[in-house]
Image 1: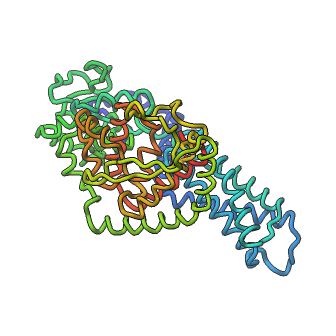
Image 2: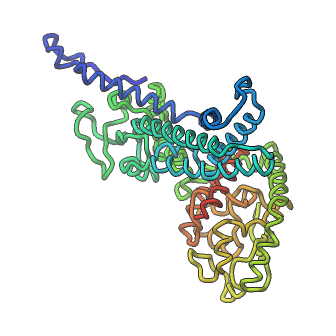
Image 3: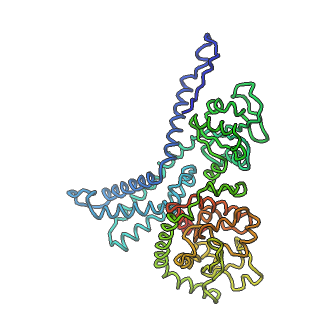
Length: 502
């Protein structure tokens, strides 16, 4: 662990101790800050399963308290061995965990925002309670006291919200020192984001470059600006800078990564216990997307994409087939209702078929419920826009709830699509976008998806800029794709459904 206090060995021996040693009050404050930072780091690194286990425990304690307070039960039979009580525990706890996963309650970024904590807790309770009631009363025919359930939910909400608020306070104290070596395409954006506080948990130290002038004064002097980026010294002084500024993470600009001097400096930082990444990796980790405009073809060689691997493709195909089949069976009763309201509003065809580009550039016919007027494209193919007048009233609801995408489950069963992946685009749009946006064609290395990382993290796109941003999110998914990530994306897509879409 880097030292927070440096001792100047040139200090005269007769200098008063109080002049070089921190006061007891300052030392106590520093110790408290260090403890809060350590605790914040521990909380931030807790896996989602720990938070899920905590929520299950809180829900069970709440229901047990409500049962003991408001429900008569045989005192000779402990609550914990009552099978009906365990059924209530299991259903309510499962509903809370599932609802929390749908609304992103267990994402680490939720802990950074007090408003997000409150809204996610409210949404979780708002979905979990009706779901638990429906399962217990309609499917299991189990009687659950309303006062007991209300007590359990109230206890869970208050304690879960309060614990996360306390965790938020500890996490806010995290200020990891960030040092940048060299300047590259993304370093300016990274530095500006850290300065604005858009990247929580980091404290900008500054820039180090091998071309900077030698330091004639100690490090803790006013920084010299190179443009709008503060410079704190030379590569030769990297170890002193890391020690004196308490650097925890180092970002090496892509242009500097091939410089032997920068490589030696990066290794020196590693030996001091700092985390060292290049700017593209830090960008991916921070923003959850790949800076497509600033990467080279070599990125695909280092990304180790999993889409073409048989050991990954086969489990993903089985997962798609199982979930799509279940989805078809469960949603099939809705199809006649959707078809009826579409016909009642404007008549005409219920299904809309459109050619899209799939894996390896192959074309296939995508199916969806019609959401536009019959004459929507008499003037040619155009992108849909927010508030598009061609969309019908029923179609607007279907789009917001994503119910118009249900027929694509058939495309998934046929193997033309996957549950999760980049959204398929029309051939007449793919060609110009591929010429305007670098690596746009590479999104077809994997199957297109019913939903995707871009769909849960970005709004409905209607411009070239939107297509570029979605490509960055799609590339991130292609690099990190896994069954676990697919499950998270599917659950978050359900959250979009309950919130009414973007």
